[in-house]
Image (cartoon, rainbow, N blue to C red; front, top):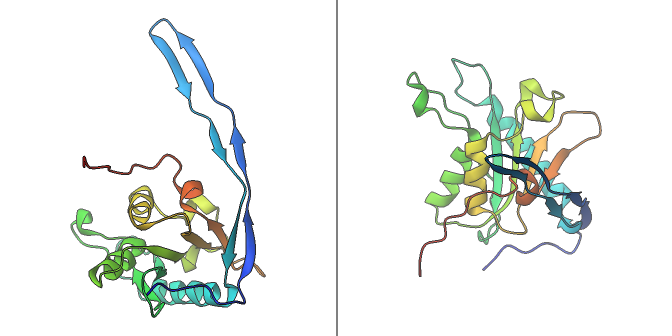
Length: 188
């Protein structure tokens, strides 16, 4: 069974993005910047549930193990193929061997995957201490964006906790979060 939206969902519009390609001709060949064309799309959201996710992400950030950077990050997600629609939290876990550090988003996704879930519905991320900072200072890192993409589909939404009065979160779908992201396509 797949978690379905309740009848009291609201409609959110993700704006279109349209920028043309550009290029520079050189003696060694053209350098091309591909166009970005994302159509406007409407998505159904359940704001009460998303508020619960943001709150759970904030709680997870408080529980983060970040003795080195002191940069505490929390995440909370709901998997689309979880019939219970359980909120699964995650927090960043640092390690003396920095390569052993794991981000909050990946901790939550790996926990969901270990339970057999494969389709990410919603993911909220909170940095608590840096709320109100520029989005680039509190949005998922590149590795996490790629891991999110692995479990995302066209319905996945990622919420970045903002902390501004009256703002629940900044919302992205996977194409707006990681345009042209890598997807391995094994041979059939």
